[in-house]
Amino acid sequence: MKKIVLLALAAAGIGVLVRLKSEQLKAGAAKVADDPRVQAAGERIAPAATAVKEKVAPAADAVKEKVAPAAETVREKLDRTAEGQGSSTPDPEPEPSPAPAPHGDPLTDPLPGPPSDPQNPTG
Image 1 (tube, rainbow, N blue to C red):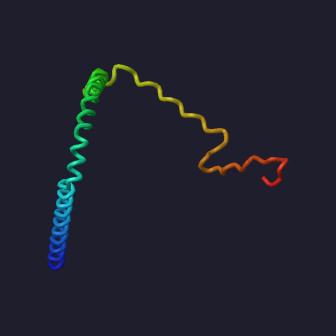
Image 2 (cartoon, rainbow, N blue to C red):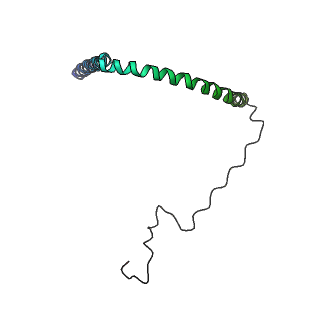
Image 3 (cartoon, one colour):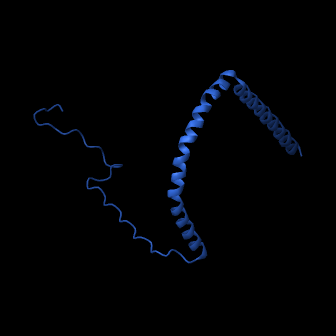
């Protein structure tokens, strides 16, 4: 019984601490948002943000037009697969694995030393 009471008190204490920290974070966020410097920066940025949105909108529309047919094809294939009919085209053959490098495994083999120069015995 004592353990249950102790756990309940601990949970209540943690809850109070979380609530207090949450209130501190909210107060700090409000303080920053109300700061005149932040307000001024927001006013300076707003026209640029609007201009960017206006310039990007046509490009976004063009992308949507180009992607729409491909998206519809994918939807149709997914629907056919979900219905159990499978794909109308055979799966492509898997690509063969690349051959291992002739010099060994770069992760386990030691690094080669500098090329030796018979004219210079020190290096």
